[in-house]
Length: 80
Image 1 (tube, helix red, strand yellow):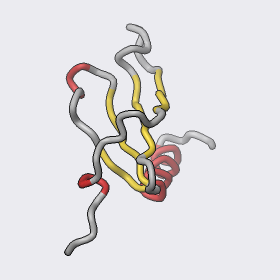
Image 2 (cartoon, one colour):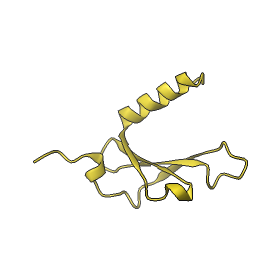
Image 3 (spheres, helix red, strand yellow):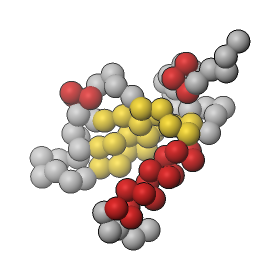
C-alpha cells in the first residue's frame, strides 16, 4: 500500500489559519494567501482568498514551503 500524500489527508477544517495579506488597493479581503497547518504532519495547505480561487489548494511540506519562501524572497531582492 502506498504512503498517503498530503493531498490524500482530510482537510483540516478546525485548524488555525494564518492570512498573509496585502498588495491590492481594494482591501485585504481578496488579497490574501492563507496557510493552514495539517495536523499530525509537517505539511501545510496554501489557499487563495479570492473568490476565483475558492476550492483550490496547494499542499506542501514545511521544507518545501520554506524553500519556496527563501527562493522567492531572493529572486525578488527581498531580505529576510
